[in-house]
Length: 245
Image (cartoon, rainbow, N blue to C red; front, side):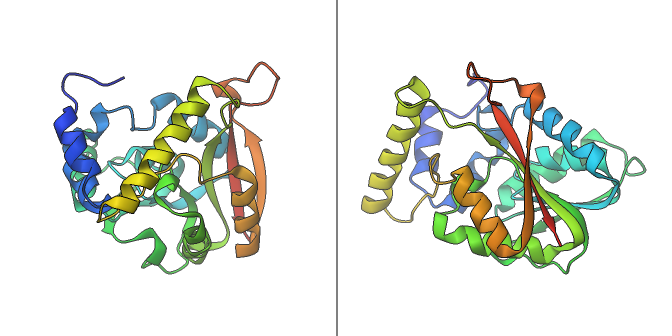
């Protein structure tokens, strides 16, 4: 839920009328006080599901934002963790938060890199890559490039993991909320430049799996049991585990 310390409506409006990068630079100081930060229960569920897939030496948080995923990687990786994002503002907050939260001698070393996820500057050095809450910022036609870049950053046998929530039931409040938001963003981007890319309905699981497989990943889906199941018995969220051959 929004908090009194979070961004004001005016601040959110200015962000929404900015480019994606500039918008997140502006939002960065208060991002962790918004509902947009990945909840701790999701971070914990992913960490618990990924841990048995290890051990891991080096981890990469793709589109790290303020560093929530880096915190997960620090629990899972032994040597080095890297957060990459295109927003200097978000990286600045992440760097400050993780410097304060941990002593330099504790856990793996942490690096922060400013780069576009569609042009990652890494050799195949990572055992584990993950991402939280970032895929709405990529248009469907950009997914193959994004996945190619992650694939090229992983060592053979490395894995790329991310949670995907079950789609809301057709006709539910969440269904209409997501549909309305995406329609509003399409109108905004048609009428106003620079564009702000953020959509809820452009990352369908079936299409995502197809794109991962075409990239060369071997894909499996794990239910995130800690997040519960829907009334029909299906998981509320799954972990996509894409392994580089």
